Image 1 (cartoon, rainbow, N blue to C red):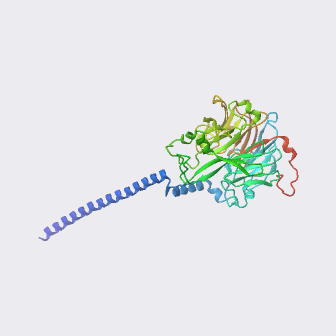
Image 2 (tube, one colour; image 1 turned 90 degrees about the horizontal axis):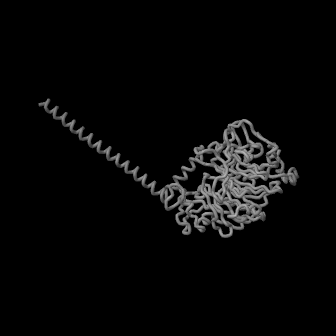
Image 3 (tube, helix red, strand yellow; image 1 turned 120 degrees about the vertical axis):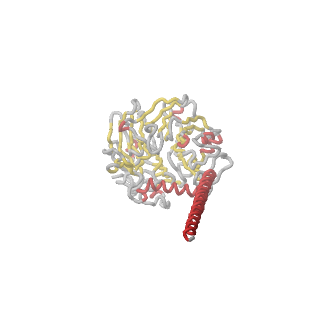
Amino acid sequence: MIGRRGLNDSAGRTQDQARGSRILNLDRVAVFFFLGGLVTLAFLGGVVSSRLGVFPYPLLNAAWDAATDWRANWREYLGIRPKYLQPTTRTVGGVTVYDRSRAFPGYTLAATYLPKHSDQFDAYLLDMDGKVVHRWNASARRIFPENPIAQRPGGPGMLEIHGVHLYDNGDLVVSLGGQGAAKLDRCGRVLWRITEATHHHVNPLPDGSVIIPDHIKRYEVQSNRPGIGLGPSGFYLDDRLLHVGQDGHVISEKSVIDILFESGWESLLFSGPGTSKTVRAEDPTHLNDVETLPAEIASAFPMFNAGDLMLSFKHLNTVLIVDPTTWQVKWTMTGPWLQQHDPDFLPNGHILVYDNRVTGTKPTLGNTRLVEVDPATKHVIKIFEGRGEEAFYASQRGEQQRLPNGNLLLVDPFGGRLVEIAPASDYDVVWEWVNLVEPGFAGMITDTQRIGEAARDWLGQPCDGVGVAAAQ
């Protein structure tokens, strides 16, 4: 009897264990489905919050942006190395090429980082041998002493000089990315300044005024801009043309988004990949240049009039020309450039574009190049692209200048180079300056301008104790 009872007890325990195992498995399945449901809800909630731009998506997006910024610029924030120092394979700095018979003589303005002279971005004038002969002390720290960002040591990310224009008398207009703009005399005295969020190019007008791009943040959708929603962080940047008088007062401002809507070209805003009924980008246009058609070459452009404005929209891969009196679009062309900069009117009736060909951190479609097009036919007339050691890739920035002798002066921003090429050939370098700050690192350059012999009239003249005229 005892043996039979033991068998029965053993069988009962086995049944209980089996039952318990089934219950445990069911519990695991229930937990799995519960957790799966939570993940699904979280995913769907993320999709909805992303689509609508509501909490917590802006918070998560801001956190992601901050993490990405730290990953890219942690050396700068920890005081190890400014972002203005870029890796380079060049081993020789200064003027590395100088063909005296073909280079256009004069002095070259460089908006760059030269730690020997300043711990922030500044404006320097070089002679043809690469010697710094003048400095304006155009750092944001001095121009905007009340700006807490400007006072941070080490050159925080948004305080490089975006655009400059140098006048024959030594006056200089600088646009400091996202912080404001100012006009300095040759001694560095501030003649005027504005605190609007100016960025990129400075376009001088014949009357002494300037047009500078700026932007304002829009935190609400507007009924006159159907389909323009808020970006992932709860706002979008509204790029404007800021007309600043010669005394520094703002004469007018005009939104480029309004220009597109008012002239019937709002479709450009909806032409990007993945765009649907609503554009939800923080920077939908990214205006990076404005150029005026000069009266002296206007006859070469029968489609346009003197004073017409050429605009460059980086994020739309588009260059267009507008009438500044009616704000009607006269001409537009998308591509063959990719996230281009600095389109210029040429005396031969063509347009020259700095084609960055941006495809991320590395070039997958080719090097950065200059593209010359005929606006009447939209045919590409000529392409200047460096080969071998002269090739470069600018994932941001980019400027060029056509010189009086027909040569082209361009900026290789991350290579820290100013390059003058003779356009008679494919890519013949006749002058080059490399800002080699230390072995393996070059100082980033954002803008340049060659000025002729007029600079001799004021170079080396005293500055009444200001102490910033001559750079040693």
